[in-house]
Length: 65
Image 1 (cartoon, helix red, strand yellow):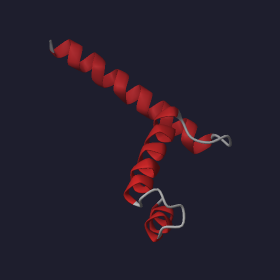
Image 2 (cartoon, helix red, strand yellow; image 1 turned 30 degrees about the vertical axis):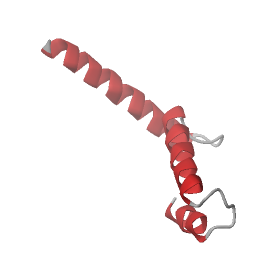
Image 3 (cartoon, one colour; image 1 turned 180 degrees about the horizontal axis):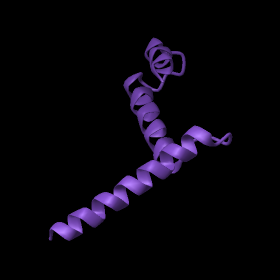
């Protein structure tokens, strides 16, 4: 069972490391994980702002990221 956890941890580490490398070195945008997280956070703030594009909440979120 410990070997399974080890293999899963190594797999997760490699996938995350590859995404970080792609996000950092690519001129075409981020990796799949970075894109997913960015879109999810943006959607959360957009819904919290009442789906108003000119909300001050969205301006604040834009400065955070």
